[in-house]
Length: 408
Image: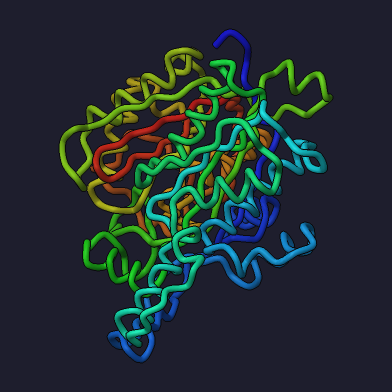
């Protein structure tokens, strides 16, 4: 990249809190947003079930509506409203609210599946109640590009605007693409990240059918780990050219150093070691991360037997004898697996971690598993770290891998 690209704003909404501060405070304090949750499909569905999930609690959009002076929750599916909430916070921190961003700005955000809550309600009326008319806003609410359109319209972005959808790598791809637009001269500023709200009655049953979820909680890299926990929420970053940030006096949080983007071309649900290693090495190469004294690694860390075993082996292989120098965090143990938003939510939390010099602990750990040995897990309590470099991993179904590199 000819000119550095920097992050100047962060935003979040999750099961841990309605903004970045609440989310950071919770993850640092070791509080989990995972709890038993009732999912009731209604009178025409199967019996209700109670299972562990990590949902946004309370009125997560109320503060946004107050700031905008109008209702948005009634016109948007939750996954789009969450994206708008996180983007609003990130732009506020970056000092970019109050005027249209224009043609030199971009929006790229990811999600895994679109407006599942809207779709389930529409199908219930159509197939269950047998109402022939579907709500006229069903398609605009469901489409995977609904979040980026909402952000673009709210903040006057007339430059490149598009969505990415690559399962759990969606937000990672969005961040990398937004940075590429800046590097390629198509934008000075990009709002990037991802959102998800698929923890609906049908969504939860679908994950259960895949036998990928835990009945209790998420235990990354732990003995006894038995699956992921579905979560809702969003994460957003504002990226911009360094000279653009300096010209307006913006505070720089970190520099974006690059991404590793690979495909396993192997299996729809099982990970491949080679793809994860290649993604990490690609991301780490430009900034000398592989030779660094300390890198904070925000692991994909789903708590599933296969993913954690594979990711631990990939970290050991990519970093070699230096692997044990690098602290590993896994924040899905607190906010659940936010699918298409997970890379963005992980990134904003981990950027706060290197900014504060504190790594949040991995929760729900029961003890070591030899399959996950040889990496330095942050356990028990927050750990003071000296790392000024950060690697964020997102490894998706279909073998789609993203690693993102940042530095202070």
